[in-house]
Length: 113
Image 1 (cartoon, one colour):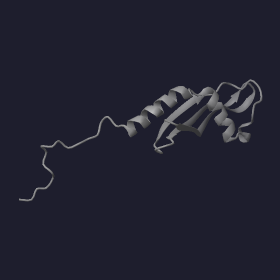
Image 2 (spheres, rainbow, N blue to C red):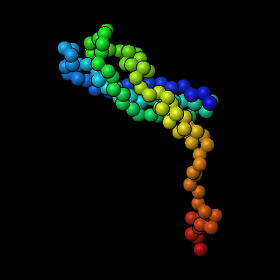
Image 3 (cartoon, rainbow, N blue to C red):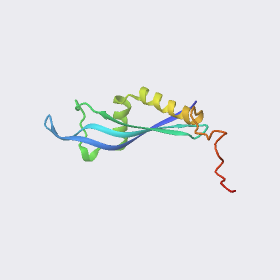
């Protein structure tokens, strides 16, 4: 099964002041989506990952790019766990174990007399 995964950062939590820096990102909230290529079936993992305090190369908040934040997620988020959960959900969609079905003895809904 070939699944393509993508991050979509949705919100940044900041510390207004940290180690002499202002508006330091401390946590990223995101959607992590997996799309199975053959079927097009997708699953979504909603997460939040803490970001360690910057040690070098601090980018001011107003200069951050989506690509930079995604690169942090690729480093700090537990993608192995998320991918396992997404793959499990896609498998359940493609191969359901529980499909609600009316029992054969139940009335058909036609109540004409």
